[in-house]
Amino acid sequence: MTSRMRASDAALALWPAVLLVALGTVGFFGLLDWVGEQEDLALIDQPLVELLAQHRTDAWDGFFGAVSFVFGPTVLPVIVAAVALVWWRVSRSWWEPALLTGAMVLSTGLTVVLKAAVGRDRPADLLAVTPGADTSGSFPSGHTVGAATLVLVVGYLLWHEDAEASWALAGWVVVSAAIIAAVGASRLYLGAHFLTDVLAGLCVAIAVLGVVVGAERWHDLWIERQDPPARPEALAVTAEDLAWVRGNGDDAGADDEAEVGSEGP
Image (cartoon, rainbow, N blue to C red; front, side, top):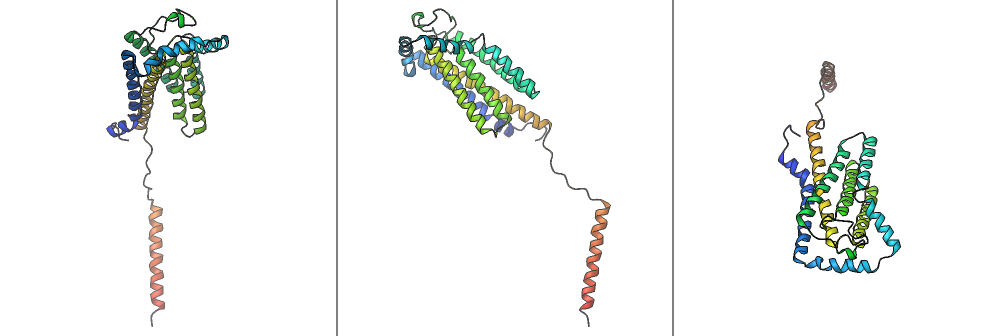
């Protein structure tokens, strides 16, 4: 690496981040267009919430209520703070905990702004387990944004520290998918959101993950520029080495003369 950041290095480092942000953004606005036009996936929003409302049980009410509470605005910040604190205590590095905290703050801010900008109404109170419990906009689902951002960012940062831990990464992917699915299902079951709200929340989390990936990979480039890997240096030639070379050359010359003499008349 030279002292100046090369455009090719930056492009190579940041393309995964750009791709993730683009995927999340396109997915979000695609879902928003479906909601506005009431077409495609938005057509099953209302029927799905009504179907779930007709098949509720006390057991599922308790389970999905607990899931929604754990990943809601009261408990989730405590979980994030605990994860960041433990990470810092174990690794003695502030960078990864700061990235995680920043990602959660960014996702929360985006959720608040997008809910207000879109202004979609939530499902009717008669379909909700707890009518009137949620007063903010419906699109996107804040619970889904928070839960997905947490597991996706933590998973990426862990993989970045140890890219060879394939089994651990596979396990985390399974756990992350289960958590995101459970949180999304809880919001549908409780009558707090529509399906497109939940999927839009996942799209926001993917875009935030892209920002984290970009920051982490740019940080790697910056560290490499500050402390580039050492290049092999030419071995220094000492006077003893020169004397040894000259000595071997003289010995070889003497041997050649001896061989010529032995072959003479």
